[in-house]
Image 1 (spheres, rainbow, N blue to C red):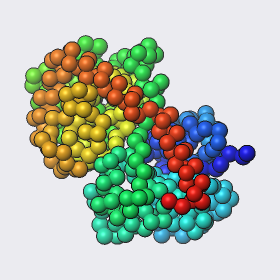
Image 2: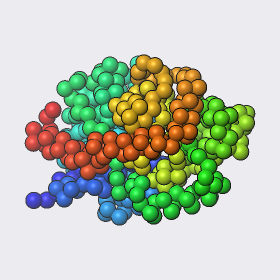
Image 3: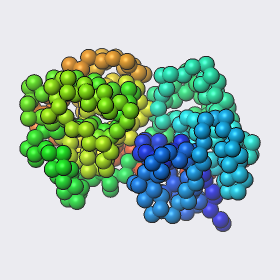
Length: 392
C-alpha cells in the first residue's frame, strides 16, 4: 500500500517558532504510513531557517514555497491551486493564520479529503473581519486542533468554532534533544555562557522567544531589576529576536541592567535552556508555549504567570511557580513584576527547592508531552478523518 500524502502548511520557514517547530516535527517524524510534504506560504527575506531546513532535509521531506502577499494575492492562489492539483494530498494540515483560512478555502475547492488546522495560541486582536475568516476556516475544516484547553475555549468563544470539530492535542518535546543528563549538551551550554561573558558561578535567569509585545519581555526586565537588587551576581539572558528588541534594550539600560542583561539573538534552544538556572516566562497570552515544555524537559525550575495555558502544564509549588495574577486569566495586559522577582529570588536562594521543582518539571513533561505521542495522536486523527470519508 502506498503511503498517504500529507501536506503540512505554515506561514513561513524563515524563523523558528512553536507553530513552525510542530509542523516540522509532524513531517520529519511521520510514520511509514504517511508521505509528508511541507509548504511555506511566504518565503521571507532570509529564506529558510537553517535548523528547520536541516531537519527536513535529513528526514527527506520535500519542501515547497509560495510567495504569498496577502489573502487576495491571485498569482499565489493560482500557485497553491497548481500545487494541490499536482500533489493531490489526502490530508492538508495548516498552522495558525493566515495559513488556516487560505488552506481551508483552497483545500475545499480542491476537494482535499481531510482538512485540518491547528490553533497554536489565542488572539487578543480579533476584529469583525478576522472573526468572519476564523468562522469560515472552522466550518471548512474537518477538524481544528487546539494545543490546550485554553485554546479550545478561545476557539469556541472568540472564533465561533463548533465544539464538535475541536480536538485537543498538546505540543510535544523531543526528550533526547532536551536531556539534562547529556554531557554534550552541558558542554555546549558552558560554551554559550563563555560566549555571553557569564561565569560558571553566576546564577542565570533566562527566557526564550520572539521579542514581541505578546511575550512580555518588558515585564521580565522589570522583574530582573528587582532580583538584581538582592542578588547582584545574577545575570539575565534573553534568547531570541524580534521587532521589540531595540526598545527592550533601551528599557534594560534605563533600569540600570545594561551590564547584567544579555540579548543573544537566536540560539539553539536546548543548549541555551541548559545554560539557565531558572526559566522566567512573562507572556501576556499563550496557547501552549513550546519553550515552556523545553525548559521543563531540561529540568529547569520555571516561573510563569497564571495566564493562558501555563497552569495546564505547571503545577504551582510542585513543578514551578505561578506568582501572579492571583486568579487565572486568559490574557493580561499588565502585571506587577514584584511577585515574579520574589519567585525568582526564592529559587535562586534555595538550591534544594530549585532542584526539586526542576526534577518535577521534567517528570511532568515526560508524562504528558512526549513528541512521539504528539505525532501518533495527529496521525490517528488523520486516519479517523480519512476512514470517515473526510467527514467530522
